[in-house]
Amino acid sequence: MNITVPKGLKKDEMYGYIKKELSKAAGEGGDDCAFLANSSAILNLFLQDINWCGFYLWKKGRLVLGPFQGKPAQTEIDAGQGVCGTAAVTGAVQRVDDVHACTNHIACDLASRSEIVIPLKKGDIFLGVLDIDSPIKSRFDEMDERGLTEAGVLITGYLLAEKTFFQD
Image 1 (cartoon, rainbow, N blue to C red):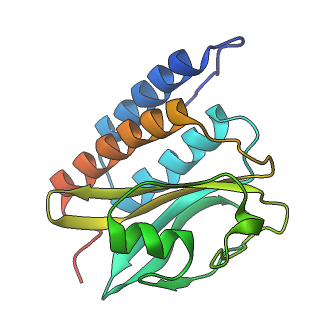
Image 2 (cartoon, rainbow, N blue to C red; image 1 turned 135 degrees about the horizontal axis):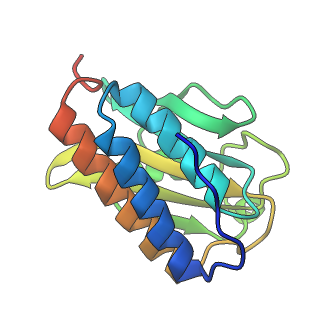
C-alpha cells in the first residue's frame, strides 16, 4: 500500500481521502487485524497533531488493546473505566477537550491533552472503539467527530462483513 497525503487539504477533503484509503484497505481483503493495523496507520498518516491512534476491541465484557500507532498503552479497560470505557457503556462518541480535567482519564502518553473515542457499533452489535489522542488541548471539533464517525462506520461494516477477528 503506497499512500501519499496531498498537501494543503481542507479538513473535509482530508476525511474524504481517509474514507477512500480505508475503503481501499478493506478491498484488499485479508485478516481483520491487518485491516485494523492499516486503518490506524492511515488515520495516523492523515491526521495532524495526534500522538496516539488505535483500537480497543470488545472481548468478554471488556476492551482489549488492538492495533495502534503510538506509545505502549493499557492492555485492558473495564466497561465504564476511562474515556474508552465510557464510550463502551454509553455507545456515544466521547470528545474530551482537556483530559487533565477528566477525572477518569487513562493516560497512555502523558503528553496527551485531548481525546476522541468513536464507538464501533451497528445496531446492538458493539465491536470496540477507535481512540485518538492529541497533545493539543481542544484538538478535536465537530468536523473531526463527524469524519471519524463516518470512518468508524466504514471500519465496522468491514469487520462485520468478515466476521473472523471477533469470534471468541
